[in-house]
Image (cartoon, rainbow, N blue to C red; front, side, top):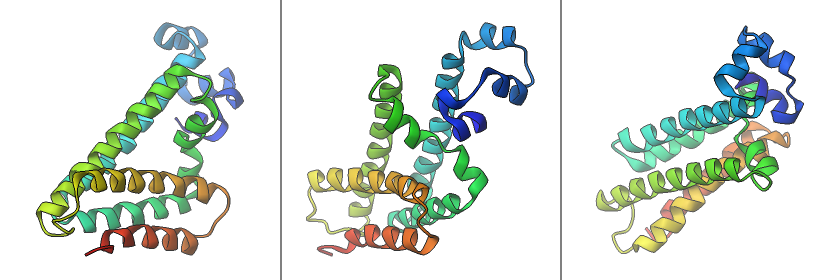
Length: 183
């Protein structure tokens, strides 16, 4: 994941992969079939790990507002850790490869749907707990779930363009302020 995250699929050589993994070329082929097979496996694992953390935060916090705040704060903090930041390859895969590769597009689409659903379930719970207006219809919560998920991902893109921590925090703060609209 580290090597692909730093160099992308095309920029990663077999020698880099073999060196990082400490295996032979034959072992790579026996286990993954191809470099692409290893990339798909690494991308899927990376996305699963990141998604699990987001879902855990959304589901385990008694307050959905607090969970969303923590999630956005953690996103901003991680984006400031250069070594970890280099390893993030969801955005690159989604932007560069998904339009050309149906399998990667499916992985990205499945991930997006899972996270939007997790946000939606959390927003339903927030409405039930009185953290959001009871009058907000399900459709509004679905749109809000989509917005929150995509804004969190856009922070990654924004950080890659060199924006500082305070700008990222400002984006997160304004994003979360939509929870107060109509309250």
